[in-house]
Structure formats: structure tokens, C-alpha cells
Amino acid sequence: MKEVNFLKYCPILFTFLVLNGCLSGSRPDVKLSPKIDDRVHQLSPLHNTVGIYIDPALRNYVQKEQLIHYNIGIHNYTFPIGQSLAPKIEDMSKLVFNKVIVLDNLQGNIEPLDGIVTFSMKSSEIELQIEESVWRAIGRHKLSVITTFLDTNMNKIWESDVAVEGKGIDFVSSRVEYEWWVTAGPKFAPAVDDAIEKITYALAQKLTTSKEIIDYLHKRDNQN
Image (tube, rainbow, N blue to C red; front, side, top):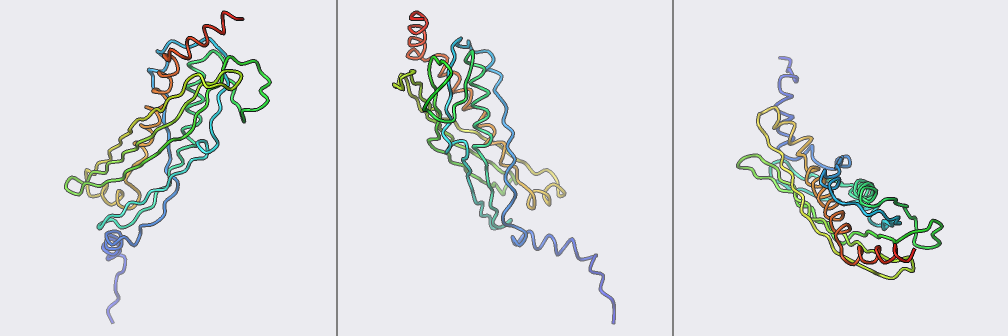
């Protein structure tokens, strides 16, 4: 009996399995690595001391999305958004205020503060799309956060909804990359990174230009 060389047919079998979605399924958490927008450094900072409170629901926010495609099968993606968004909000706050105290809760503050800024998630929508004609993957992330400025007696001075849309594109340019793309990709993380970078800048811009906040802090400075 003639011996069959299975190694010869492995690439064909592998491609068949991939194209039928057999190697699809759950993936490790998507790695996010947003940066602080350089424009934040160009804003005029406020010289006051504030406490910032980030809602635990935002800090721990995880979003799961499923991509269903007739060619590459079903893929499940997990975006640990809160793990990346919360630290960037802290970094941004430290750039727009003279001193920032990160608060675990809104009760019993020890340090003297000029005000308190709170952040909470309003909505997060991630869209995963593949354009077969050019083998291009497009990720979109619509992200909105509610931010509030409170005085030291917990009275609301100012509140705003900040919304942005992030976008990321992943292209395929060769057969080798195609084989990688359908098994390990595409890269949708840049859309989420882009949204986080945009929203931290938008938050910084709002906080440093809000007439209500500036007037309140100016009045407080005069009282001191």
C-alpha cells in the first residue's frame, strides 16, 4: 500500500479549516494601548487641587463583540475598555489640574479640595466590519462619557456628555498576511485606542474651558 504523505496536504487542510471557520472562536482579550493626545499638553491648565472619582463601572468596563463572517467564521473579541480608559483619564486630569487626588469614594475626603470631578460611562458601541472586495477590516468605536464637576459640598456646578468616534483599519496585502489575518486578526484594537485618545482630549478641553468651572474656581480663590 502506498504511504500517504500527510505533511504534503497539511497546508491545504489548514486553509480548508480556516475558510470554514473551524479554527474560529474565542480569542484572548484585545490588547489596548491608547496614548494621551499631544494637544492636551497645549491646553492652559487650572492651578487648583481637585479630587477625581471614576465610577467603578467605568474602571471595570469590558465589552464583548462577535464578528460573523461567511468566509472566516465566527470570532469573539473581548475589549477591556475600562482597564485602558480609566488610567488615561487619570493621566489627563493630572495635566489639566495643578494637583489631583484619586478618590475611591465620594465620602470622607481628608485632603482639602477645590472641587471634585466625576467620570462615568454613558455608552460604548463597537462595530466590526470586513469589506471582502478589498480584504479590509474596519473597526469603529462610538464612546461617550458623562463628566461632572462638584463643589466641596457635593453640589453640581457643571455636567457634560462627551462623545467621540474612533476608527481603525487593517489591510491585507499578500497571501501570507491573508493566512495570518483570518486566523489571528484582524486588528480592531486601533479603533478603541483612537476613541480613548479622542475622548480624553475632549474631556480635557471641556474641563479647562467651561465657564461654570472657571467662574467657580475663581470665586473660590478669592474667598481663600
